[in-house]
Image (tube, rainbow, N blue to C red; front, top):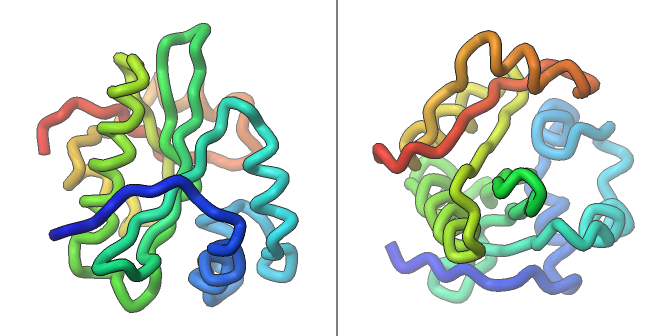
Length: 161
């Protein structure tokens, strides 16, 4: 699959936001109400200097969006807010895109790479597992969720894809 990783451009905002088609998808992807999905939300996310947004282009077509969150103090990165265009779901685009984000985080020198998914988002967990992530221990997951507004399933990259 010839999926190309590129830096996000604000011109992509409306299309990416349109990929969350239901309130449940908006909640699982962005952790916000469906009606709050607007370009200014992406601007808020991208204002954080430790967040780098990316898109995946398949045959030149916008097909995926996600972020790499860098934590230099802990020497770790987290992949976040990953979404695939609805017409591209179920064809391995998400797994390939996640692998490209992992490569980007690794190239940045991060030795530990994490991802989390809303507890009910089994499709995201399957995608991350296929890309080489494994679920953390229950104790670690509990600790990671202490500061969260909701429980997440936390996974770490092992490279065993």
